[in-house]
Image (cartoon, rainbow, N blue to C red; front, side, top):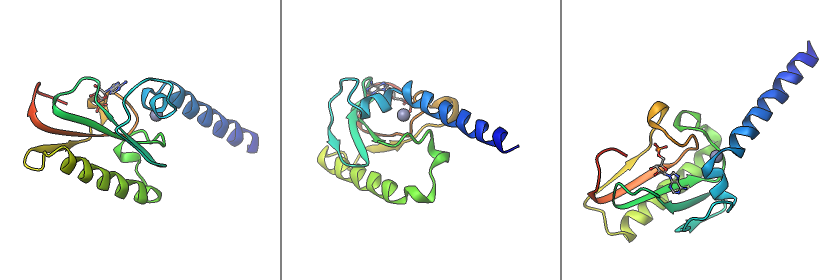
Length: 129
Ligand code: AMP
Ligand code: ZN
């Protein structure tokens, strides 16, 4: 029984590592894929969206591979507070206080399964984010 539980745990860990290996945002965090880093701290990065939907379109991405919004736990509270503060900073710096949206997608709306918040501001260039 114990062996079964262990092999199950190991299997899940391997699956998790495989997901991180395939994850474009984990690769960007590890600097394996080129991008412009607008901001970086111990816990998160901010990059421009590769396919901007508006005049301002940036992504706030935790370094930890949290898959999606519903996977956020109490232990992430400092990270989430930092994401909020960084979003506020960029809203002000980009001068979009009068016209912005924060968006996070989930389920089949989420194309990259690594938590990220979109900050879009100014005029939209296309419909959906
Ligand atoms: P979603 O997962 O649906 O919230 O959207 C993922 C977003 O990531 C899309 O807006 C993509 O344009 C963006 N994206 C995908 N790959 C990259 C990349 N290498 N650098 C910057 N943005 C990206
Ligand atoms: Zn990831």
